[in-house]
Amino acid sequence: MKLVFAALVASTLLAPLKASAEEMEPPKIGTSMAQQQMRHVKLWLAGHAGNWPLADYELDALNDGFDDLNRQLGGDTVETSVGAAISALEKAIAAKDRAAFANAFDGLSAGCNHCHRALDHAFVVIKRPTLLPYSDQHFAPRR
Image: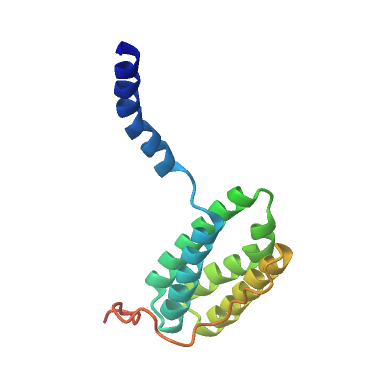
């Protein structure tokens, strides 16, 4: 009886530790990619509107997500596919150059598609967004 009671107490005390460890696990690649797609859309909307601080913020978040994906996948598949486009986007945002931003963004989308093909997910094709899915956020810069 004491053994059963001890096991019950131990499982009750250890359950929060197990939950905490599970919460700290890295997200699954599918979840990470869904976040990346959201950031990709928001980056386009911000840059297209000329909201350079927001574009810079979204690019930083996107870059952090790519770093996480590289760690999850191992190797440098993601960096090889999108690294040059990220650099071009950083330059375009710093210069506040919409034409350069659009070209670099298209390069990013092409890099995403290259990575998808390399990982046998060619059925996932990324492009410029054409609709505003975030109607609750202003993308134009504040005046």
